[in-house]
Each structure stands twice: as structure tokens, then as C-alpha cells.
Length: 377
Image (cartoon, rainbow, N blue to C red):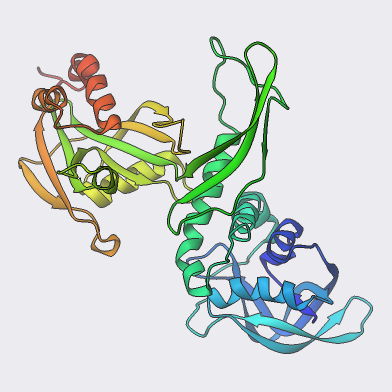
């Protein structure tokens, strides 16, 4: 089968990730159509517009297996195959198939740029697509539609890890070849993923050990915010039922925590922190970065960006928060920092990031009080 591609599949890395091969492609155009940005998406859409021309590639001789891989993505978003005549640069016309968007998809204003998409989104999207096809069995189209944002978030987290610059003043400075990962199993899970693999690594005595069978929970980077009123010395804690304590067998899985949420793909930690604080607590805050860390490096990829959210807190002790669209059932507590410290010491606050941020505030509240004291105080 021959396919005319007009959008993100013009990118070779994504073509390989989705179909398994770069394929036999040649520049082509589709007359009577226009490629435009799609509302709410970084990928474009194609629509019939008399007098316009859509530039793209004619992708020839795709096998049934390759078409099936591509169809998984297209079916997830209700695209349909249609036969169209496309014209090559030599003027010859060829019959091809093109995936057309569903009628409800709306075009946005402006022009869509492949170069801009490749620069800002291409590598992460290709990595997410590779992760999709590492599944066995592959998800159904309907499942892929709701899982795809999670694939993107994990790929985005991996991209951020690759450029994180951490000092090696005390610890060993890793070199290429020090760690080798092999025999990756198909990841397990729908929302998060459990990844099994074998690892070999350099020893401190200069030797190597492995391969060793290991598993890790592949989670999502998160932004953590403890709202704090530096003038009145009060914090906000979020109470909600948590799956970790529940599955561990804790008789009370309701936890007291800071505001917390996953960082969306292509979002900065600061953007996520501000968004989550508004969504969960209804607060506009000024962020003060405290630390970033792996909360459980032995068994999970989770990475937390932790902030104090400086703000003027409401004169209430308790209120509801969260988004109904995300099935959040949150109770928010406004209390003095000293009370929060007492809850840490009693063990009622048992979430690590919350303990970290409360102790940081205990060490720094005097400086913050002076920094934000009224001018006439």
C-alpha cells in the first residue's frame, strides 16, 4: 500500500518508530487540501480546501504489518483512510491513501511547521512511539488514546533526565560503558509501567558484575508545592486517599501531603507547579525552589521538583479542592507551621516530600518572615 503523509510522519525518526522502517518516500503534493494546525494539538490536520495544496511524502510499498502499526495510532483518534491522487515532483500522478481527521476536529489559526514540531516535540514523540511498540500485547486503539499522554510524559521525563547536570564532587563520575542494560521485557501496566531488564555495571574495585535481573517502576516526573503564608506562618496540606499505603496494608490510607501533580509532556516543572497549585488548592503562588530528588531510586524512576509556594492564605481552616474531571477528592487544611511540624513528629504526616518541605520551612521561616514583613512593621 502507498500512503501520503503530510504531518508528523514526514519526520524520519517517527516513521521508523511507528512503522518499524524509514521506508521508501519521495516528495509529493495533494491538490485541493490544506495542512493546518489542529486545536488543542501539536500535530496538524488536513482538510479539503479548493485551490490549496498540501505538501508531503508518498510512502510506498508498506506491508500489511506496517499498515497495522500505523492504523493503531490513527484509529485511536478516529482517523479514516481515503484514496486520493497525489502528484510527484516529476509531474506524475499516483493513487495513494491518506488518513483524514474526524469531522469534529477543528483547525486552528496560523500555519503548521514541520521544522518547529521537530525542534520542540519530535524527539520526545518518537521516543513515546517506540515505547508504545515495546508493549506486548499492543494496546487497543481505545486504550492507546487515553494512555498516549502517559507515554509522552514518560518520554519527556527521560529527555529531562538526559540533560540534568548534577555534581560529582563525592560520588563516582559515570563514564560511557559503565552500565549496560539488556534483555528488556515488555513493560507491564496500564497507567504506570513495571519494566524488567538485566543490568551489568562497573564495580568500585574496577571490575564488573552482572547481568543481574532487575525491575523498576517507570513513573512520571512530578512537581511538589507546599503553599506557605510567610507573614502568618501557615501552610496548606492536601488530604487524600493514596494507593501506595492502601496496597501496603496501611489501615488508614488517607495521607497529608503538599500539592502534587505529574509534569505534562513539554511542560516545565515550574509551569506544572503553578498549574497544580491552582487546580488542587485554588491558589496563586510565587514559587521558591527547594530541591529536586529521586524519592525512591532503588525501585522507581520518579523524580520530584519541590517548591514552597509563597502566598496569602485564606482565613479558613479547611476547604475542598481538586478537579472533578480528574476524579480528585481532596480536603485541604490550613494550619500553623508549628502544628504541621508536630504532625511530622507524631508520624501523622508520613509522605517524604511533605516532611522535607516542612523541615525546610522550619529552618528558613525566620528569613522568609523578614523578607515579607510589611514595610511599616
